[in-house]
Image (cartoon, rainbow, N blue to C red; front, side):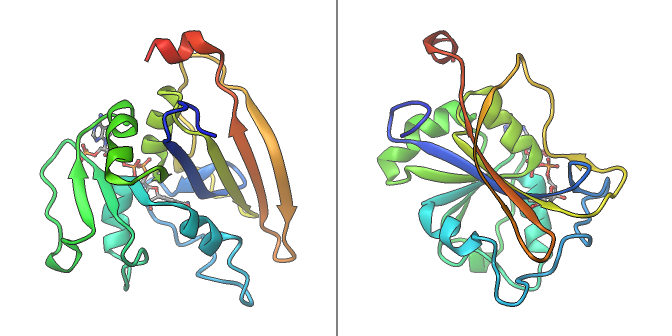
Length: 192
Ligand SMILES: NC(=O)c1ccc[n+]([C@@H]2O[C@H](COP(=O)([O-])OP(=O)(O)OC[C@H]3O[C@@H](n4cnc5c(N)ncnc54)[C@H](OP(=O)(O)O)[C@@H]3O)[C@@H](O)[C@H]2O)c1
């Protein structure tokens, strides 16, 4: 089931500090646990296998490029940017840049066989929410306060109700909650 009924769904899968940040002010994510804990991947592989592509903001893409290894294999990655994007040659087959708004992506991507996207980056997730196009969000809370940073959620144009689906408390102390967005009726959708 999608928010649009058009065969397009967007989900987010993101970790936050207990005080709600996705990165320090300069983008550092050193406070995130590195990789798996005792083989526990917190549902990441299963989530990844459910998506056809990632749609990530330029800031998140730049961060991922700094990692030792490219984490997304052959999964297509669409990088949202209003600037020229230099794609490293090794990634030319999977990474493309786009300046399209979420509404346009929702209309165009299904024709390319992309029906479920992983929206990543705080600004990007906010843009999908404001377009009423984020269907689900999985938030994994790390038990640490970092005091300041890039928030997961930004401004909204009105209250955005969500339906809580499930919460899992892991032995490691990470707490993961899944919410479904319950956008207000047809008026909101027709206003897009
Ligand atoms: N904790 C986690 O699980 C997690 C997950 C993902 C990311 N992160 C961290 O979050 C940080 C990045 O998040 P973020 O919220 O700063 O940004 P983001 O969503 O990753 O990217 C924001 C970028 O999107 C582009 N953009 C904005 N509006 C646009 C428009 N109308 N059309 C096209 N492109 C547009 C802009 O790039 P241009 O300026 O090039 O136009 C903007 O800088 C990084 O530090 C990353 O490490 C953490």
